[in-house]
Structure formats: C-alpha cells, structure tokens
Amino acid sequence: MSRKTGSMVAAINDGIAAAVNQSSKPRFRGVVVKLGGQKYILPSLSWEQFEEHYDALVAPVTGEGAAVVREQLRTYGPIIGDALRRNYPGVTDEQLRGYIDLSNIADLIMAVQGVSGMETVEPGEE
Image (tube, rainbow, N blue to C red; front, side, top):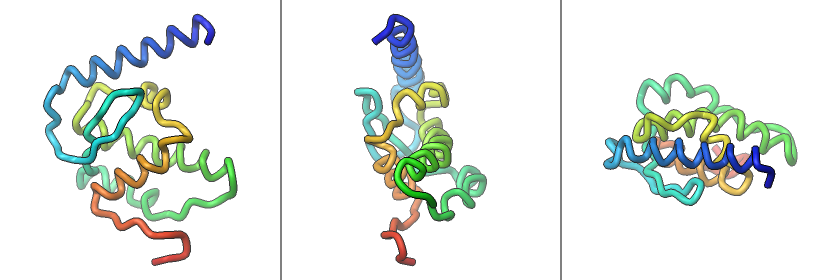
C-alpha cells in the first residue's frame, strides 16, 4: 500500500470513528452491519428518503457481470448512506466509498430494503 493510500485509509477510519463517537447511542433501530471493522446500526429510510429514492428502489438492476455491480454501487451507495446517516450524521459519501465494496454491497442492499419494509424477491418474481 502506498503512503498516500495509507493516509487516505487512515483519514477515512478517523472520520468514521469520529462520526460514531458523535452519536454513541443510535437514534433509530435497525440491523447491525459491519463496515471497515466497525459495527453500525443501519436503520430504515425515513419517509422523505423513501420518497426521494423510490424510483431507484423499485427499478430492476440491468446489465451483466461487472456492469451490474457498478450500477448497484452507483444506485444504492447514496441510499445506504442516507439510511446510515440517520444514526451517524457525520458519515460522508467519501468515507462510505472506502467501506462499501464488492463483498458487502449485496448484503447492504438487502439490509436497507429489509429494514425499510421492502420485500426482497428473486429475479423474475413479483
């Protein structure tokens, strides 16, 4: 890891830790998710957030292979961030881009949809 990358990772870790310390007791209940070695309570979207993201939440993900993952990251990253900021307002999109990755995006999507009352279905089911 380069010195610059190491510094960036350290800054992200410090920012997330500071955001967590701002709100030692989450305001909203949710599901426990692990990001960057830390546990967070991911709450549901607020009514306002749900309305704001409705079209993205109900739209089918299209494409194949890496294109699907790229679309998921671009579509759901901001949604996950909005939900997470209900309990951790100091968490930035830049910090989340350091923690959301190919290994956890699907679980995070299912978590935010589940706590927001959305039913998850297999492709082709309605």
